[in-house]
Structures are given as structure tokens and as C-alpha cells.
Length: 502
Image: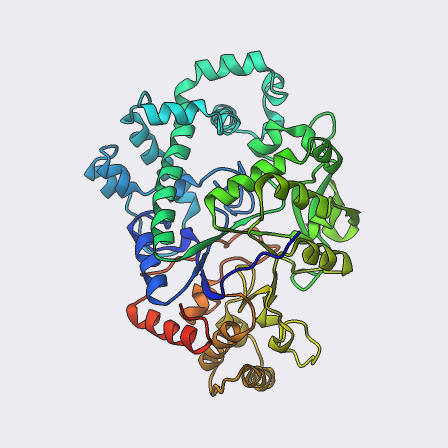
């Protein structure tokens, strides 16, 4: 496989959910277009987001009810009102107090609003009829309709539905056709709005980096629809589950709980499921970041009944054959490999064999170790550099947690790295160090350098997106407003000074 070459440029990481508006969670509405304008003003070439999927238990975009779905929460309610599907009064009622995302409130209230919109929608219009007939969301809509009816995980569905008896499901769909069509309507509206937003973003010369997790959630239409592709027992319970061993983030490892793939079965089917998934991702995004890329070389298998991830073992993954097969079908893949965590020679060989750029995190660089692979002098062109990711502290939060002595050492090492890149940046206080870290990221040899919006705005850990191995308080961060032209101007200067200008 040949290396994928990306145009040298700067990126900003900000998920759709984090955009401001009056309705409790970011959407595909006017604020998303305004954010694209901000990126354009700041001379940013890449907008990175997290998975766009409909979230399930825990509200994580990495635990979805369907890996190909769009999140109904992101549907722009003002657009529905303009289309005559909501009244002004209903739109007013949907307004939510400012602040972080309240997923409990959203789950109770947002679907009520969306059902009102669906009640006025003409399901017989040609475009929607074609969307339904395409069958892309058949399993998803049936799964969600069953969930609404029985309010249990799919393994607790009545036997005829749990094991997908075709005749029983046809009868269920006919009896519950309105509910079935409601869920397809949500996907229709989401993808219609996303297509328009993406076209606008691309018209600004900005490419979207999207994210897909390696694994899917157990209680999902993906597992329910094709259980034979996963490591399940005869009663559809996971035999083993996914996670990672003890590491930087957790002393007992991370027990994710996702079912593992039956890679032998997937290979026998010519990896068609993965090819279809990647094709869908490349329709949504310009570049796909694959989360937990190391799992394609070797993956961590944890007994399903284990209380922690400490008792797992490594198993061989599909390796490069998966990507060679996908590339034969889809052509050259625009992919970024998330190669963080426990990395060994096998993962490096796989990453280099695919030609995908890996990730470099500057927060991990300045520990005084002169051979640290994240130091700018060791960062090669075929990579993507970040100050930090959605799983890290914000840069300011990271620095605020340092002792005075640690901060002093960090500052010295950061200044040395900047000098290596050809910059002199004074650091007298912690906010200066955040700005210096951003400049350092932009100044590396990486084709793409990405700064989370929290670091652009120098926000503390109150704005952190996610803390791994915790089940609450995550994914809630929201901007109070679209960053100003002054912020765009400062970032534009940094972009230009580091040779990433347009």
C-alpha cells in the first residue's frame, strides 16, 4: 500500500455537540456554518470531529446504537421549523438553559420535539420514499422500534425478535410502521442536513476529519443485525470483550465491554462488512481517523465476566490484509491511524505498511527523556501532531496540575523544542505555556497539526471532553459562543508563522 499524502495544514478539533446554540447541544444549524467561517478566517484546513453517530448508554460517541447512524440530537430544529415541521411555539419550548449538555433532559425532551416534526412530515414524498427503499437503515429502524416497544437490551427481546425471525419481524414492522418510519425519518433529516453542511465546509477549502471506533457497542443494531460476525455464544452473549491493559490512563486497564469480532468469519466474507463501513465513513468525511488502530494488529481479549481489564490476553488481528482488501474495492484510503497506547513492533509495521500517518501528542513529549518519540525533533512528516486529544486534559488543565518544579522543567524543555523548530517563545506564566504548546504543535514537520478548541481558547479542565475509565461527566463540553474574529486572527498569525498558511 502506498503512503497517503495530505496537504500541510492546521486543524482544529471541535465536535458538533460542543457548538453553541439555544437548544442544549450543538447541531448542524447556523452555528456550525459560523464555526466553519471562523475556521476559514483562522486559515484552518482541517476540521476534526468525533463520531457523528447516535449515542447509546453513557452518551459516548464511541458507544452507538448503530455505527452508520447520525445523531438525531444534531438535527437543526430551526431548519425543521423553516420547513414547516415545527411551530414557532414548539421551537421556543425546545430552548434550553445555557451550559454543558444535559443528556438526561435531552433524552426526555428532544425526541418529543422530533416526533412532533415527524407527525407533520409527508412520508410519501419521493425523496424520502427512495431513502426508505434503499434499506440502509432497515435494521437500525427495526432495532429502535423494538427498543421503544420493549425497553430492554436486544438479548432480552422476545425470542422471535432476538434471533431475527424474518416472518415475525415483517409482522412487527407492519404493525409498528409509524414507529419504524420515525427512526428512518431522523436519519433522513440528519444526512440531508449533514450533506449541506459538509458542502459548505468544503467550499471554504476545509476538509473534515471524522472518527470511527474500531469496535461497536453490544446493544446495537450492528450486533443484533449480524451476530455471526462477533464472538458471541449460542444465546448471543459475548464470550469475551474489548479493552486495553493497565496503562497511562488506568492502573487496572480499561474494560470497554464491546464484543470482539470473529475475524475468521469476516475474512471468509471478504471483509465486506468492513468495506461497507469504510465506504460509509468516506462518504461522511474527507479523512477518516480510525480509533484504536493497534487492534487490527493485535487486540486485547478480556473474559466477559472479568471485573477489570487486568486478566486479558493479546490475540492476533487481521493485519494488513484487511486494508489491502478494502483498498482494492474503494481505492486509496484517506486514513489517520490512532496508534496511541500500548504500541509494539507489530503495530508500527502495520501502520507503516498501510502508509497511514500515526498520531503524536505533545503533552507526552516534555518529560525530560531525550529519546521521547513525541519530541518535535523525532516527529516525521507522515504524522498528525496534537497538543492533546479528547481523552486528555486540556493543555491548561494539564499544566495547572503540575507542581512549580514540574512546570519549570516543562517550560525549559518546551522552549528547547521551539528553538529546534526555529521559534523563540517566552514563557512566564501557565497561559503562555499553552500558547507555546500550540505553536510547537503547528511548527512540527507533520503534514497535519491539530489543536483542540479548548487549547485554542486556553480553557481549563472544566472544559475537558472525556476522562477514560469514567462513566459519568463526559462528552458535555459546549462553547458559550463561536470564537471571535480576534481569536481567529491570533490563530491565523500562528498558522502563518509556522508555515501552514494557505
